[in-house]
Image 1: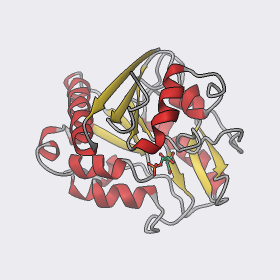
Image 2: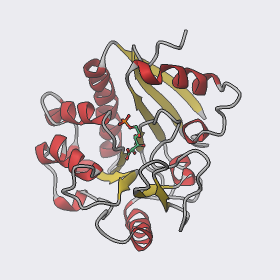
Image 3: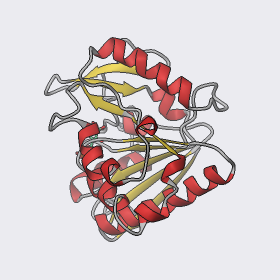
Image 4: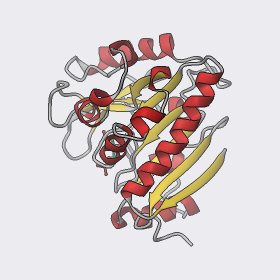
Length: 244
Ligand code: 6PG
């Protein structure tokens, strides 16, 4: 597994850097006649990236017609709920893109979590080609990182329930909110995992995880290790402050 670190001055510059990489990766897939399987993350950090992607130059630059949109996790709430990752993504990005509804594969947060995890696995298997790990291989999985080292809805010390090979059900450790999430195995089957982390508050944890500081190795964000892919940390200067 290769690991790279990209640092930009601020969230807007970081969004442009990531957008440029995404545009090139989608171009490569489209040039070989492949669909680009993109799994998006939730939370607040990616909203700035999504907003940039939804405006010029990126809205016109990226081959959006070649992209299939998925989510790495979703809160078990209706799609118009203020905490819905789908709603945030729709408002900041999807509503601004020239794409078809069929390209959007949302997790149905309004439905019971365990059957939905099974349904979503079926959608992934039907839409994403299998890679060298024998699991569906996303071209990009975009991930955030919580202050506790969680990523997607893989929380420290918590195993997914109703875990299949690709998806399972989690509970947020403080709010108790149910989540449907990718499994660590599905994340590790990706061609690229792109962590997007901004702000000084996460700088120490980012540095500890990248340096593999003892005590952090079991954190879900530290465990991400695609055997046939790479991990790129997209950091603003504040989040990279703990690195040389
Ligand atoms: C979610 C995300 C979660 C998020 C981290 C960071 O559904 O909330 O999948 O893993 O990426 O909690 O969240 P912030 O970007 O809000 O700090």
